[in-house]
Image (cartoon, rainbow, N blue to C red):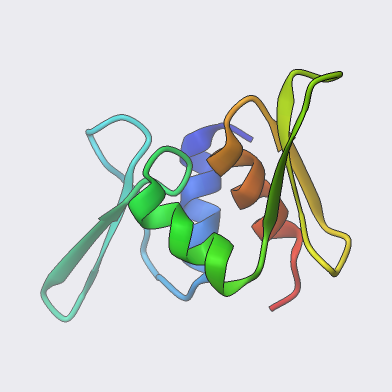
Amino acid sequence: MNELEINKAVAEKLGAVNVKPCSEGDKVFWEVRGQFFMRDYCEDWEDGGPIIEEYKISLYYSHELKKWGADTEERTEGIDKNPLKAAMLCFLEMEI
């Protein structure tokens, strides 16, 4: 999955509807009663960090793979060069 697809899937998993790509990179946006929301869960710690904290996703660095890993007690896992992207891949595997 590319970052745009991941951002859209994360927003939808969190309950957003009618999520659309934004003209700013891989961000996504949606509207709720006239209020607009724009997020980039894979690149912005302000957007992705609260998900990591709330769902207790652990991050680690593998020197062997030269990539970041993320996992949870549920044994979901994500691996990527970008730690936030690894965490969001892990989040998408979780059952919430």
